[in-house]
Amino acid sequence: MKNISSIQSATSQPKDLAVLRQAYQGWSNTPDVFSRLTKRLSTTLSLEIQVGILAEELGGVIPFDTFTYRHQIAHREFVYATGIGGRHRCEYRLNLEGVNYGTLSLNRRQKFSEDELKGVEMLISAAICSLRNACRFITIEQAALTDALTSIPNKRALDEHLQRASLLAERHAEEYSLILCDLDHFKAVNDQHGHVVGDHLLRLTAGALEAAIRNSDTVYRFGGEEFAILLPHTGEQEAREVADRVRDAISTLRVDCGGKDLSVTISCGVARHMAEEGADQWIARADEALYRAKGQGRNCTRVFATIG
Image (cartoon, rainbow, N blue to C red; front, side):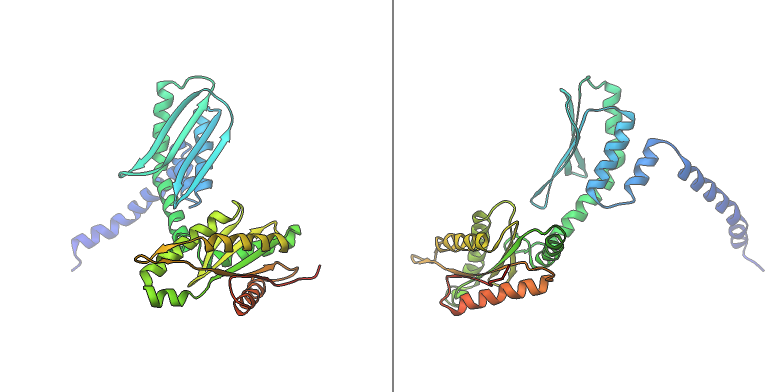
């Protein structure tokens, strides 16, 4: 004898599926701005694309002259802006569950009405969960590419950027140079003063390297006491000058070790990207130049010379 509940469940299934199918057709064909906005936002985790979608959908119902979104994510400022002008302004801090996910501001020549401001708030409410997910995705990505001790990009980030730089150098015939740096006698620092002092020195070194380079250059922790600096639009001679400036900056560092100051030096190897060269070959040549600098007395710069 069949269970009554199971019979009811079986006979109601086609009806349930029909209702589900009808609901799906209604959802997929719904022309309202909220359904369209949330569906479009769900297709990507790119914050830039999501904010662009929000600006587009918002502009379709509430005209504006300027749309600006700003957010500080993983120590980096993200800015999206479109349009220009407008003396009247409304601004919203995007908060969800006590966490801030940026600031959105609109400008235009005419004052916003109360109904328009409420409309902006409703659209932001529909978008904020997707924006939160995109912000979190960036944070996770940045954490994977950031050295935990020094808070600068790590070797994984360097590998990605070297690959991209190699492609750009080939495609646009641009000059790129790479500097590998190694703190001299760093093992002795750890052995004599401990890893706490050693870690502090590594953080100081990262800060000094960033302060010694241009905004267009990037410092990476290559591993242990090794650092790398990628220099776009830079030839061998300019790169050598940067390396020497870096060595001067590191030589001024001082760490108080109980009444006695600890100072260090750094050795540098320079290599300019060569035609049809992969990232691995490029970094191997910079490493060879660094090896020569270490073997020829340390606290010096050596360049892997190229012809042409």
